[in-house]
Length: 402
Image (cartoon, rainbow, N blue to C red; front, side, top):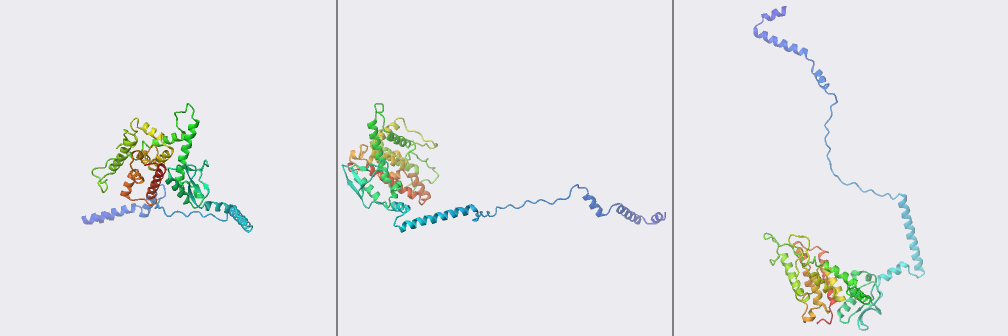
């Protein structure tokens, strides 16, 4: 009771301060210590605390080194040992043959292919035809083994064929067609002539109106190029706001139209009178369209009536330039046969190798002028195209052409 009396005797402000202090002390006595609070707070969770899972940094890094094969494997060692024994046996056989003065089989084969069996090449007139003689041996067809005989009206072709064989340095080169292209072209014409003759002699009454199979197959293939002729595939007109013109102010389409007009005009006037050709591609189409009815039949009839030399030349020119119209004009202007129009009119041919090559390469030349020439591609194709077209002129022309 004494503390109460003491508080009562104190002033009012002091009593209030003493009361607040006593209340704070009582509250502090009732609360647990801070450590106990932390322990009680951790006890609320049922699991242990986990650390944050940070995503690792991904990187490509250098590629792993390739596995190195072990030379200690038994299979590789056995193979290497066998190869070594085979080489030793082969060397022993070669040394034995050399000591006895006998060349080995490999040396015989290599020596025969590395050198040619002829020294000089001559053009001789035999029984009303030209023959190419390798020393004393006449040049023969690689398949039929018949002698290659050329008409007396084709001296340029005969001498060009002789030069082709004189340029060969080994007999092995004679087995590669890309080294004897003129020989392959001549043999193609001979094959067509022999097939025509065989079909004519064996033709029955049922097959009297049919043509030889080789000639028919060539015509079928060539007519496919009429629907996709490179002279009739024109690019769309240029945009007025673009700069798609050359130094002379002409667009690619205008150049294509001019080239096609010159060739088609000649063919419509001298080869196929009255026949009109249309471009095979529209501006907004990627599918070629066929010509008017009757055009295909006229062209097919002209092809089927060509002589063997002319037909072989037409086939080579079409495959080289991808244009039936350009090849037809080239053959018509240079042929000495019935298809030749220059000899009938007494005029000189104005459509040669360079003109035909430029007419069938307008778009390629345009792209080269804009973007440059690809080395070992465009330059090689340019020369090869002119080489093939030149061989066509040699094949179809002759001294009888006026």
